[in-house]
Amino acid sequence: MEKIEKNILMAKRVPPGDKWILVDDPTNKVHLSLTETLEAYFQMTKKPCHFRLAPLNGELYSITTEEVAPPPPKKFNIYGE
Image (cartoon, rainbow, N blue to C red; front, side, top):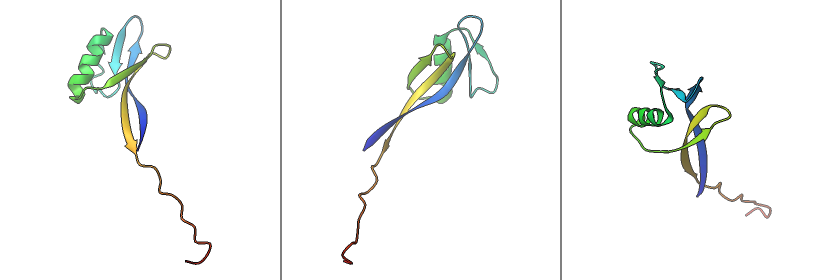
C-alpha cells in the first residue's frame, strides 16, 4: 500500500496581522489568531488533523493521508495460453 498525502485548504489570512477566515465557514467570521482559527476548524470538523502553514501565500492547510493499492501486474498472453 502506498500513502498519498493531500493538502486541503482550510483557511486564508486576512490582512493586516494574524487574522484568518475558514474557507468552509458560511458566516465568514474573522478569527483573530492562528490558534483561534485552528480551534474553530477542529470544532467545525470534530476531528484532529495535522496542518501546514504556507506563510508567503497566507494559506493554512489540513493534511490528510490515503492508502492506495498499487495496480495489479500486467499479464501478457504471448503464447495463447
